[in-house]
Image (cartoon, rainbow, N blue to C red):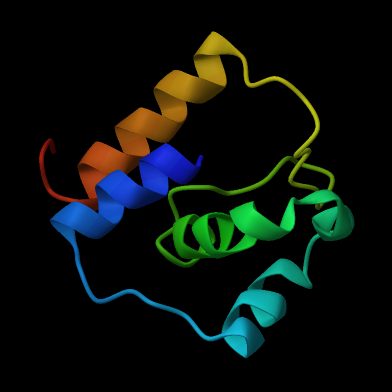
Length: 86
């Protein structure tokens, strides 16, 4: 997800977040404590842009491997949010 967030920031710069904002966004997810410290800013940016939506059970599942379908959905939302596709 960090690479996706960096790509998003290249297309839409100026989305730096404070640690307070990051913690506020992640607080709504039960497994937010499992997100690695270095990945929290990237996850928060993608959450705020509605690129990452989390799993249906109020989780981010940071320890699981992303499926092909999840990867495609993530990329599609990234391209739509950045207006690179309709």
